[in-house]
Length: 493
View (cartoon, rainbow, N blue to C red):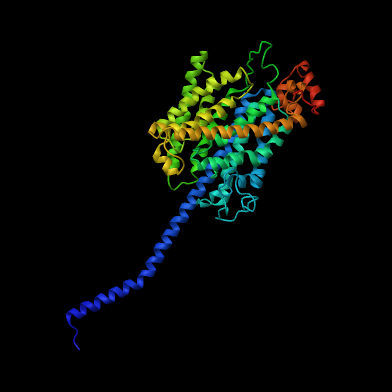
């Protein structure tokens, strides 16, 4: 039977359609495989970036150590290092046990849902998120999320002690670290990071000007009020005396380490590498720090006709604190303005506070006042496009969006400050009435290294060392007596 030309065409078409239909499942499988591989690569990139950024933030502990060592006298440097290591260790365990669940339990108003929540004593498995966690919707596995959030807690705890250097009993660090890492910091973190009530109101704090820095500074302020100034800080006329730190090079090394660590602090808060927003935040963070250092240099020259090294460094730190909240919400030009204003704030803040309170490293200004300014600046400078991108709040006043966001930011600052102050003051008061906050006058004069730890941070400065430089016996007679009786006694504060 002959097949017509038309029939041949129809037969050929049918064969082609049949072959195409047969390959459709294979094509779909290939597309699915490609999509799965792409998603896996994205999750891997996000996870690696989150861990690397967290390591940057962890290294900031070295920055705090060097900053505080530099601003301390030689007789008190060893206790600073011991304090940093012990507090890092305590906060590691407590935040795993309790803090993470309080901060990131499923979104509720005041604290995370900790009862029955797997974030409480969490157990992590490869590639899995923490079930029930506010962070559960992200692409980064739970273990990476926990580590990143923990190092923030450790930074906030480190900030507390800058105000209380050179006269605090070591036991105080331990006793306060437990409730701070387990409840105080995690609760504020939940409010603005973990889907809590202030975040639901639209409060913007991208990486923690309030959550991390104001919280730490406020707790330090509460402790300082109960602790009192160092011996000799204020004369009989009430005027402050300068008690300079022993090493500005070490202090400024601390500043540079902290500046470096901030590139994990702010950009890492995206918990995401694949959307590339973290690169924008690197720029805003760096510009703000530079502007703060320059502004502080100008301010201290104008105020005292000297280029104070410590003030310049504090200008960079204050600017980094200030840009932490708005870093993911503002354009580069705004970052420069925010950083410069912070540099001015820290200089005049330190000068004013020094007349009233003994804050050896300027933490109340650099982390407290600058933290307030940074949080409020979101209400002025937040770009509406970036607010929508981050899905929190709305644009700022300078973008024609009115005072609403500024009001939300001010309310967030007030509620966070008042809550942390009340809780911290109460805890420090209990500690003072039980074990005491302050070392004895004798031990403060001799130095905390020898009275609390039995050895100086710089032994050759205070005692003869075999093979070391000759020191006249009269210079070491009194410290030698202290070494023989290092048992602490109750302080007078």
